[in-house]
Image 1 (cartoon, helix red, strand yellow):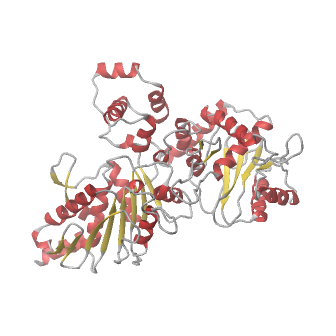
Image 2 (tube, rainbow, N blue to C red; image 1 turned 120 degrees about the horizontal axis):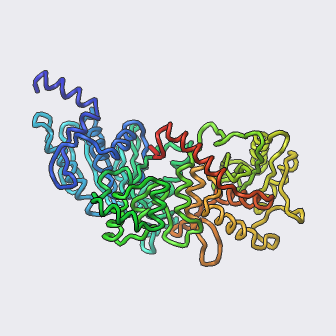
Length: 538
């Protein structure tokens, strides 16, 4: 290469934004063109890849993120001074072929002076001769399939559609095929500059992808969550004439009116939504999973949901992710009353213990959660909240589920002088055993009315995510569905239980929901969110 070309190459090599935009792809119309201009929904994803090592993408179908991911990893591998081994794990043979074709197009349409020879080019591997970097492609399936290699970067696409455990592929430890596949891949990564990239459309509240999504909501997690709602994709709309707009506006159903009123969905977008649901035979729930408008919708269950997903989708707009160090979502205010509710756990790193602060207008003001506090430390966390939300000498009552570890926490709270809740018979709040009766069902029935009528505000995003998975099971239990492919099944409803207990405590004290105050609070939060850039996670 001439000195001038060497200089241009070095500038391009060190600038991934410029490099990626010069790569060639086949677009949605099968036309060959350079990437050049990224679509708006691709920008957030690309910037996340540049800034974070572990990135989790929650996306609508055909989001265009796999193209950007492969282009980014091609830049990383092709310009590396040392061999980088990229592992792409896909869920079907069609994606294997598509990824191979994509990487070959990137290479084939480089300038001739920069196009290194391929030393390996087959269905499984493409290796570049100038630095030994390679792309490896595997179909996500049986455990241990990646352990023969050492990889530099890992890209897992459509993880939500990876195989679950069946009778024919269960390991001795009875872990799922998804977990075995993932563990075998992670075991090969030893490079401190490794990227671990996961993106998928939704497949309900089960499996590895759902577990990683929940981790990404934790402020202590190393995962960075990226989500762009389907309404931000320009191509997801149909042009309408004036008459078509008028006719559609007059025949909107309740669901469509909800989308217009709460999410600003346009008539053109609703026309596209109708066509897509008809063409793909999608129910409203399946559409929300495949084309989410909030980042938790891909994890909705198919049926038997206890709470109205539309109401929870609105609440998710106003929910916020926890921060580190811990801080309340809404600080105490003079003249308001508060209560503290809780669901306890053993503090052994499994289930969370969760404690909520509920205001007298049924607004969640704080959520303090952890899975390593033993009962006496849980009581200390409750005391912390009680001190913070004691307003004008009025200590908040504390209502905690007395089952399992809860009674120990309640007694420790009483030893600390806290104002523990009692019923008319001076008993604690039980949901199991003879003392409970139907208390849990009563609490959940009451909570369903309050939540479905949007008479409360859930401020904690992980709590909304849990509420969206609560189902009524065949045996009448109301709880998270768990992962039926695991042994034992795992459910996640600790924060949801704590919030429902709080609503029940407010009900027993005569606190009545006030729609006007809830709307006022949401307007206040909306103004804050508008100032910081809206609702989408990025």
